[in-house]
Amino acid sequence: MSATGRIVISVSKTIFGEFVKCSTTAATEVRSTKMQAKSGCNDDAPSAKEVTECPDEENNANAKKIAEVEKELQQCESRIQKMKKGNRELVKEIDKVCRKIDVLDEAIRRTETYLEAKFDEQQRALLHHENSQDHDIAGVVDRTDKIEEVAKDMHHQVEDMVNAVDEHMSNLWNPVYVILDVVLHVALAAVVWLLGVVASHAGYQFEKDASSMQPRIEANPSSEGSSEAPPPRQKLKHKEASQKRSKRKHP
Image (tube, rainbow, N blue to C red; front, side, top):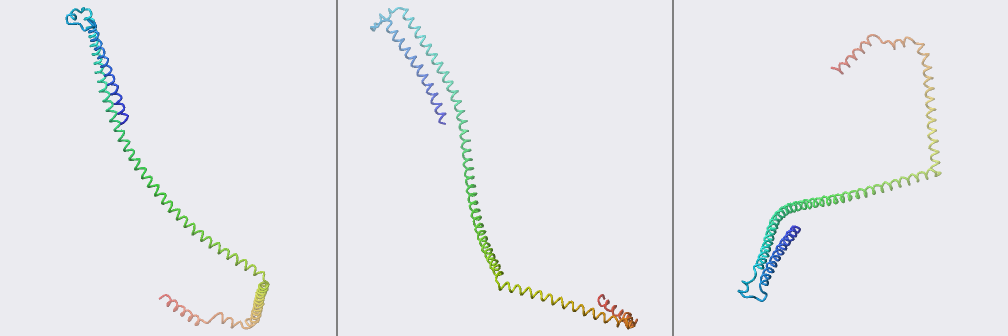
């Protein structure tokens, strides 16, 4: 709006300057013509009789000058009218430009409002993101501390196990433990040897009993046949008993 005001002021100054210039020029010419008319007849303030006696040529010359001045005044007036018309058109154009500038100002104001709202929203989102990141970082730090504590505990446990293994290995080289280990292995070997002896003796005894029973079976074949083939009545009893058992199982 300040630029528009400056344009209007400059145009008004130009028009006013031209108007003053034309008016001053016309007034100066009229004044000089009148002075020439007065001085043409008599410079010493002549009387009415002397004025009537002025020659007609000077009057005609003064009339021509007055006509020229009036013509110039008319030209100045026409120029002023044209300038006024141009000024009115310029004022209309300036009004159009002012309306466009008002529309642009409104659009700029809306854009500024939108940008401010968007900026505030982004600031809030950024602040929320920073807070959430801080919270996540704090959680990660806590979990890291817990993991470090667990790792330290495992490290201590491993150190204890290593120390126990070292102590056990050092005890293995102790003479007492070496003697006990040798005695244990010897005892185990003795037990295994005794078990082998007992098993071999039992197998030998079983073979001996079997060989002693073979001549008796060959000497009494009837008893072997009777044992292998039971009488028919006994078979029937066994069959009935098996049927009763099957009925009890499956009624």
